[in-house]
View (cartoon, rainbow, N blue to C red):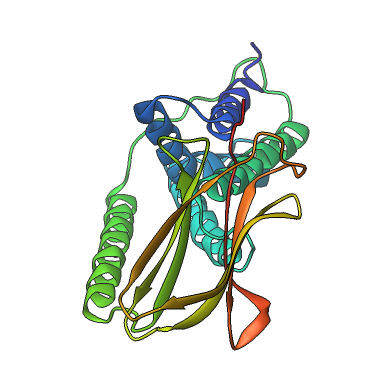
Length: 250
């Protein structure tokens, strides 16, 4: 394998494996960690600095920094999309950024000379101090965010969720209200534009947990994921909460 493409092929392969998913929990967790902390940053660094003149220590710092930056900015972007902050949406976004960066780096990277210059891997005192300060800043930000979230919980929260049913060929869905967010809602379960079940007047009290199981018909005309939509009675035409679940029917 050519040294020009060996590292890019490995990074691209790991991103593709994360995109395809895996059955094992340990493998999925490892690929997810690499996808958040390493892979997109390495691909973007290789695309921005294709001649490999960047020292290894600086390349490592750029890799971690770009990866965290892409993850943070991607979180803001996904929060405004219909898919929201889900594992699948995170995986697709970060994997595509990684694969795109690898492609750009492969196009821009010149061929390596026969005797490539070797660089020593080491941190100077200043670089080490910056790396430690960056790590402390990230840890401090996480601690402060968790502390503030615990001290100031959201007073009005309505959570809609959907999961596969355990005993039947169907789905389980529910609504959880936190705080004084009570009221009347309309809940619709559909697939491919066809309504499977509907609750036209769902009354929810404050701090309530409502659940139901919906059996999926064997010959459902619609295709695609099962989608649950929650509407508020005060705004019947605007989707208030929406969740989707891909179900494998045999």
